[in-house]
Amino acid sequence: MPLRETCCSVCDFILEYDTPRIVLIKNKKVGLINRLVQLVILSYIIGWVLIWRKGYQDFDSIVSSVIIKVKGVAFVNSSGFGERLWDSADYIIPPEQESSFFVMTNLIRTENQTQGHCPELPKNGFNCTSDSNCTAGLIDPHSSGVLTGKCVTFNEGVKTCEVLAWCPLESQTVFPNPALLGGAENFTVLIKNNIRFPQFNFSKRNILPNISASYLKTCVFNRTKEPYCPIFRLGDIVRETGDKFQELALQGGVIGILIKWNCNLDRSASECVPQYTFQRLDNRNVDETVSPGYNFRYAKYYENSAGKETRTLIKAYGIRFEVEVFGKVMCVLRCLRSQFRDSLAQGVEDCGFKLHIGTRELTVQADTLMQC
Ligand SMILES: *[C@@H]1O[C@H](CO)[C@@H](O)[C@H](O)[C@H]1NC(C)=O
Ligand SMILES: *[C@@H]1O[C@H](CO)[C@@H](O)[C@H](O)[C@H]1NC(C)=O
Ligand SMILES: *[C@@H]1O[C@H](CO)[C@@H](O)[C@H](O)[C@H]1NC(C)=O
Ligand SMILES: *[C@@H]1O[C@H](CO)[C@@H](O)[C@H](O)[C@H]1NC(C)=O
Ligand SMILES: *[C@@H]1O[C@H](CO)[C@@H](O)[C@H](O)[C@H]1NC(C)=O
Ligand SMILES: *[C@@H]1O[C@H](CO)[C@@H](O)[C@H](O)[C@H]1NC(C)=O
Ligand SMILES: *[C@@H]1O[C@H](CO)[C@@H](O)[C@H](O)[C@H]1NC(C)=O
Ligand SMILES: *[C@@H]1O[C@H](CO)[C@@H](O)[C@H](O)[C@H]1NC(C)=O
Image: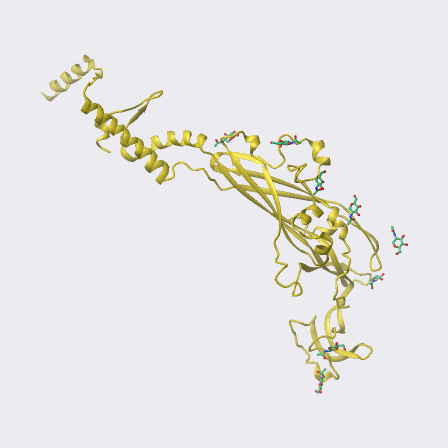
């Protein structure tokens, strides 16, 4: 019996034809309700999805990489050094850094240091008249080594405590003036910067598509004449911050190279270009006489002919350049168009209603809408 019924309904189904019927209702009330429902949906999409939930976004964070190459040589002919040429392998310390580079502009060098005993420099707490003034084994943050407990002659008339340290000690306390590597003013730096706005799948680099290899070999950045050349003369960078290079070179400092990308994706991609600005980052105005500038020490180690470990200590003064990349992407028309499409899909997901988007018109099946 159930079998017969099932069979019948299958037959009915096979031998049936159905088609939706379109009813045109010429009724002001129904028409008004229909339009009202459409208005509600539109305001839902625009108000809730686009504006409130920021379904359309015009900003994106920037993803960026920076590659730096410094070129130039400096010639030094001074009493301490004799004739010496410095190239980028000598004055860039360390050779490779992320988004920043240090150019040595001045230095104090102490050669042939070995571990041994020598008199401490005459400074507070280390002058002595007898061994009793020197406590053996004392390590002081201001001393150059471990006190041995002896009082020895530093030079005529001055006696200081003996230390176990890298001897001879660095004795020069005043930096050379003028700066030994003042020639760094003429060095150039090539900055390669790739950026990407991941949300918009948009990428670009600061070597613009119209820059040829031959142009890149000769150009130097000039704000008025060559604003897109990615090669900068260090002297020009410092001058734009309002400083004098030769003065900054004496004790060093920190300078920021800011690259700003403001891109409007509604316009052509060739209008998305970098803007360069330079800024002094260390504060030189507070009190110039207290711990000014930027310096650090490093050493090069050897073995001398007697097989003893020897080092050359260098106190390096210089300028650290930090490259910082900022970016903002504007995308109104293009993004609205694509986001509008996504918002409709979102509406379907949120409310379970179905929207059929024709070529122009938005037709809504009113009955399914009531579930929303
Ligand atoms: C370096 O200086 C010395 C004397 O100070 C001079 O004789 C020599 O010619 C200089 N070298 C160069 C290349 O200028
Ligand atoms: C360092 O040692 C080398 C070889 O031992 C010597 O020729 C040179 O003059 C020394 N330099 C100093 C500054 O003492
Ligand atoms: C130590 O000796 C030096 C040189 O004579 C002198 O300038 C300094 O003031 C002395 N320091 C102390 C604490 O006596
Ligand atoms: C060294 O010690 C003696 C007494 O122990 C003291 O009179 C003298 O002032 C000390 N010298 C220094 C330079 O501290
Ligand atoms: C930089 O180069 C110019 C010419 O190319 C030269 O006149 C100037 O002396 C150089 N500056 C330094 C500090 O060497
Ligand atoms: C991003 O753009 C590149 C070309 O500009 C294209 O090959 C790639 O498929 C795009 N990726 C996505 C996820 O759209
Ligand atoms: C840029 O070029 C102009 C015109 O040639 C020149 O006057 C100016 O000094 C240059 N600026 C720099 C920083 O070289
Ligand atoms: C490269 O294109 C930019 C605009 O995108 C333009 O301002 C610049 O002058 C061009 N540079 C060269 C070398 O043609």
